[in-house]
Image (tube, rainbow, N blue to C red; front, top):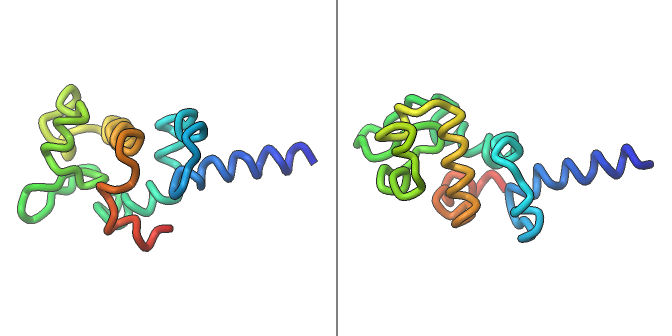
Length: 116
């Protein structure tokens, strides 16, 4: 019984990070849990086909999560690279997590809409 409850809680925490997450659960989530969440995976697949070096055809959107350059800059991404597509996967996950913690999934509304 304890194992089932533990698995359920972990499953809920990882999945809950994809939709309506309580403030407490959101505060306790790590960037590693965030990157494993179904919605974060879905975003990466839809935005960049999980390729960290991808740049949009107009040059405005970069990396795994297709960061808008001003957002990348505002969230501190430039400590890693000038644009997301020049940063490592880990660095992009960390900035995406920081963005999500601050504003939720709203920057990826069109990508997440069918994800949850």
